[in-house]
Amino acid sequence: LRVALAPPPRRSSAAMSMNYISEEQKKKDFQMMLACSTHLGTKNLDYQMTRYVWKRKPDGIHIINLGRTYDKLQLAARIIVAIENPADVCVISARPYGQRSILKYCQYTGATPIAGRFTPGTFTNQITNKFMEPRLLLLTDPRTDHQAIAESAYANIPTIAFCDTDSPLKHIDVAIPANNKGKHSIGLLYWMLAREVLRLRGTIHRSQPWDVMVDLFFYRDPEEVEAQAKEEAAAREVAPLEMDVAPPTTDWDQPQPAGADWGGQPAPPAAPPAGDWSMPATGVPTGEWGAAPTEQWQ
Image 1 (cartoon, rainbow, N blue to C red):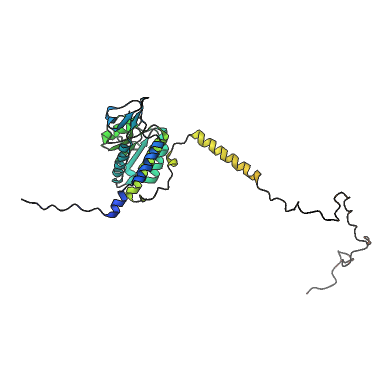
Image 2: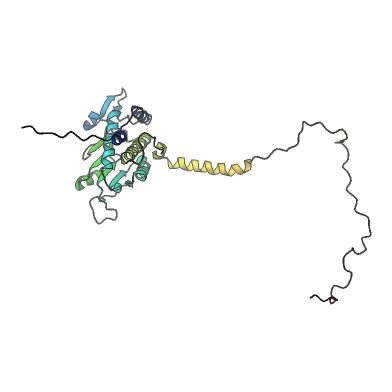
């Protein structure tokens, strides 16, 4: 018995161009990850993270395979795009280095951020004010965000997390191996994930670079921000005092006129006009000011 099998549907050229990543673009992405130390793990190694480790340095630091990191970022972006309502994706970061990153990520993708301390019972206790039922969780560090992971296991919420070499993978559905302890690495990972999500949604084209700088996702020290604000205020105060004054138009190279005497006495003031100051001025009436007018005005 022969069964006629229909050929698989061909993908359109537009869909293929949307998902195609050029080698030049991959090279730039890997260079950025190397510059942000995304490949550097810790000295400890969890047995479930062994598959993502490439080598171990002489000082004991494990090196993460960035090829696996890049593939897992693509997988995570496709999972996030599959959620119809972007607000149903909850992004959590209790670590200070990741709080600015998740706020920027949620600003561009429409997800819901939880920055700072995670209130226990947010996913399980319905009488709390901040109760929510997300369809997907995105975590910065499984060790610091353990409470959210435990509650997601009770509520059957799929979980994506950035995992270092020593991170526990319990209740983690998609682990993205990367350095989740450096501020530059965390910012770059969220920037790349947001860019890939927007590309899969069709918001930005893959052949054009994203106009948002990765620096916006980096953590900034409050003391550094305050010092920069003081420097800018001081610069604004000094700027009016240093206004450019137009130079005089005198041509000092021009020769001195022949009759000019620079060492003589100044000329005397002009004499007042001659006349009798006691006489009344011409054209001014000399009569009494309080008398009644002699002419009738019509």
